[in-house]
Image 1 (spheres, rainbow, N blue to C red):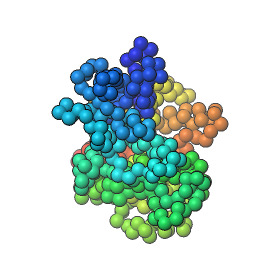
Image 2: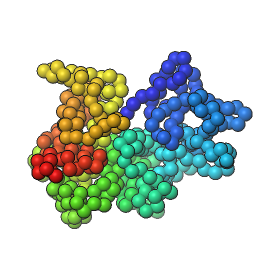
Image 3: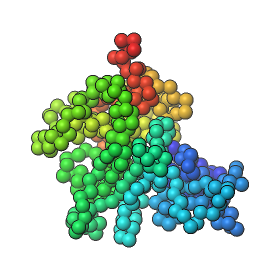
Image 4: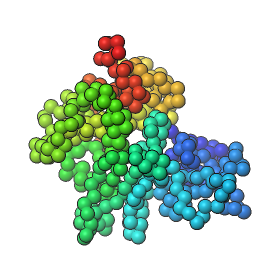
Length: 389
């Protein structure tokens, strides 16, 4: 994730979530290109906004930005119909929402804000990778949508079931992703993490995992050839899912799971292996982009080339990125070095490791498969290259 800079005289740093500049106090936000946080000037006579470079193009805040501060989206107004005050106006990210939490419950609003921050970060990376990203109004049959709701009481950190509420399970179904609002509550999520014996459980991780399921459908299932190839690396995803789920929760992961899987949950079923590996790929490339943005070096003992390796690393988000096996190898090698620094920083703050995972060669191969699937270059997988395909 990159940072941005305001155009004011202080050149104030702007973050992806910024909604105003703390130096000049102007409104800042993301328009539908969804690639840059920038400042907007207010036209007092109309109450509309414009960019200095485009004084005749007007914008207004997304309703969720103006009313709830859950996003920082700005919407370009139609010149033929500049006033949209009587209609709901939603930004690029908010147009993916099908259901939002019950806002008559005040405690839901800050949790929804957390949900939107995580969702927008996940979408930003997908858009930077030029992956297909359409909401239901753009693609009624294959678009992406989100439900944010709950079946439990926020007043006791979601411990109690709400009367008359149907169970809400975080998951994916044919492009529709449901995230239980409880996952935005630190106490509730920590309880679940401990109960499940998980090393890592975050709201952003949930979004990336479920989006992995969505893109498995988009990138793999729509091609019989790619589906067959995927089974070679992740296993037969046509195995009975419910049976696999029951077996996992009855017996847990095999003792040697670390040899071939990124997490214990990835052992449950090939679908989950793909989704867990997808989420980690997104974690890795986003965190490395952040390190590059701040010019953080990765000087590991004995690695004299680490500084050049990180600052000059060609990441998949880069507009000039060209997918190759050498590229993903460099990315993963750099990540393994940098994660040592990341974990050491956390330990210095008395916190758990930020990335408590091991990338074995089998896991690296799965990450490589996802990397090449995203860029439409599965024929560059090493074993296929050896065969001249």
